[in-house]
Image 1 (cartoon, helix red, strand yellow):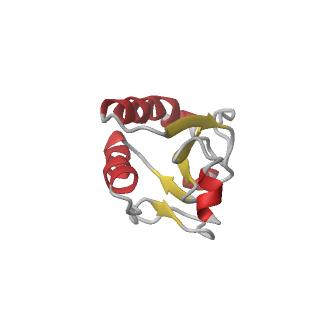
Image 2 (image 1 turned 90 degrees about the vertical axis):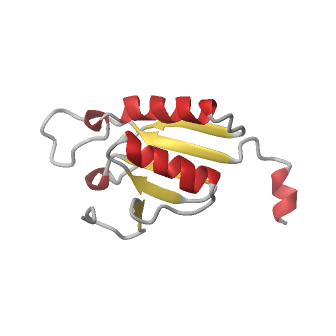
Length: 117
């Protein structure tokens, strides 16, 4: 069945960056105030620089993990990440996108409610 669905896919991975913006001081915070757009642009440029094909990087509205943000999700892998810098994005590119391994220190679990230190 998996081979059957490959025929319909266009990208091997689709990465969504939450870029939701809320009013300053909102109790849940927002990814936009944590440089989400700038870091998304960085990841997009790095993917292109590495010549990685069939990857789509998009902005998204709220992914509803605000307290854990900034947040990205990679499909079809269904892996959610928190990041704080381009160093984290470099690690996600190298280990997850290129290497196929989850970056456990940045990965968010399904029921996680706060950032691990």
